[in-house]
Structure formats: C-alpha cells, structure tokens
Length: 252
Ligand SMILES: NC(=O)c1ccc[n+]([C@@H]2O[C@H](COP(=O)([O-])OP(=O)(O)OC[C@H]3O[C@@H](n4cnc5c(N)ncnc54)[C@H](O)[C@@H]3O)[C@@H](O)[C@H]2O)c1
View 1 (cartoon, rainbow, N blue to C red):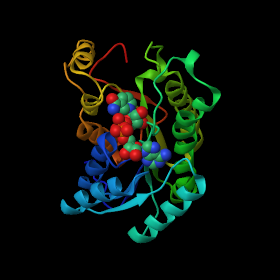
View 2 (view 1 turned 120 degrees about the horizontal axis):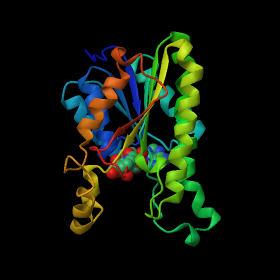
View 3 (view 1 turned 45 degrees about the horizontal axis):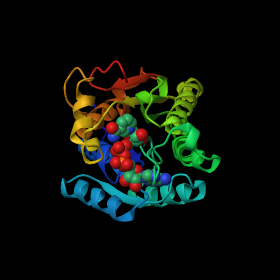
View 4 (view 1 turned 135 degrees about the horizontal axis):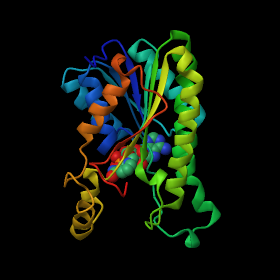
C-alpha cells in the first residue's frame, strides 16, 4: 500500500525541515523526487541524502514565486528523471526574511512576500504540471498550510495567515474542477513542528507544548508519511479537504 513507484514528485522548499521530511518519505515510497529550494546547497544536500538511501532524486534550485523559473526548473528536472510530475507538494511557505510584527507596524511593501510565496508560488508549481496530470487522468496535489489559516491569533502573522487562507480557498475550488480527471487536491494544515525548537526560546516551546494534547511537536517524517498517503492511489477518494496535523491542538 501507498506505493509511489513510477511516480514523479515535486516538493517545494524541500531543502530543510518539513519539506526535507516530505521529500525523503516520498523517495522511500518509491517516487522519484524533485527537491526544490531557493538555496541550491540545501536542495543538493537533501537530494544527495535521498540518493544515498538508494532512492531517486534530483535537486532543482529556483524561486517558486517566479513563474518562468518554475517552468524551466520543473521541465529540466522532468527531462532528467524521464517523465512528467504527477505529484506536487507545495511546502514552501515561510518567506525569506519573514517579518513578525503586528499589522499596524507593516507597510504595504511588507504585505507582499508571504502572499507571493503562499499563493502565487503554490499556483505557479501547480500550473506548470496540471495539464499533464489532467491529460494523464491521474494527479495528486498536496498543499501544506497552517492552522493559522482558519483561526485568529495574536501572533503578529496576519499576512502569513492571509496567504495560507487564500491558497486553501484556491485548493478547494481547484479540487472541484479537477476531480473529473482523477486529480485530487488536499490541504495539510500543520500545527507546531520540531524545527521551531531552533527558532524559539525553551519557555516559548514549553508554553506551546501545554496546548498540544500529545505533548510534543510534529516530526517532518510523520508529515511526509501523511503526504505519501495523500499522494497514493489509495487516497483517490479524498479531495478538497483540509486535514489538521497538529497533535490534537484545539488552538490550531
Ligand atoms: N514549522 C512549523 O511549525 C510550521 C507550522 C505550520 C505550518 N508550517 C508550514 O510548513 C511549511 C514548511 O515550513 P518549515 O518550518 O519547514 O520552513 P523552513 O523555513 O524551515 O524551510 C522552508 C524552505 O523553503 C525554502 N523557500 C523559501 N522561499 C522559497 C521560494 N520562494 N522558492 C523555493 N523555496 C523557498 C527555504 O529556503 C527553506 O529551505 C511552510 O509552508 C510553513 O508555512 C510550518
């Protein structure tokens, strides 16, 4: 079950953290993986680790917010792997230089990066491969989002949440359009993940853990396993859904 042999998967922002876990698990399930990242060294490192495990991967460094670069990058990787992408995981969602400030302190220029990445970046990756999926009669789109898309939190992340909410709406409508061609599109809404330990103080992490019933942060390999399921034949009956991966947190 959940065998992805013969499929070609594209994972954006896969050079570290959650995306790295997703790329590795898709590779372990048999997919050939296009490891995208803005930073070439990160993409190369993760692709090399997938190859070391005996699985198939190629690094593809480009900025997903640039449509032409995305088109060129995906076509070049497809040529290298010998076939079209039929699994897309839009994971890149934390813009470089992320600004963490209340909305009152943001200028209109500050609004753009999280929207560009979470909405247009994700749409670029889908657009480049969607016709191929529909023509083939099979495709899987997994959008990584956040619980912050469906709640209101005083965490200085209004624009990030706006980007996530926007792409979730897009994915639901896309799923309704493409189901007739065997292309599913689902959203995985993450709660707090392990890599936050590198970004936050121990006190902040302790406070977060108190809100998570399982008492721990999420693991990239577990997120990867969830994505592998959604990318599989066996998940063909699920589309247009937002699925929480948050250890049971009610605060999202
Ligand atoms: N980590 C968490 O606790 C958490 C919680 C909720 C949601 N998420 C979501 O999970 C996803 C992954 O988060 P993460 O914490 O692993 O992020 P991260 O910042 O650790 O890694 C993301 C990678 O994306 C790359 N990237 C950024 N902009 C890019 C672009 N324009 N084109 C290509 N690559 C780009 C970065 O270089 C980086 O290597 C994001 O969508 C994020 O919103 C994460």
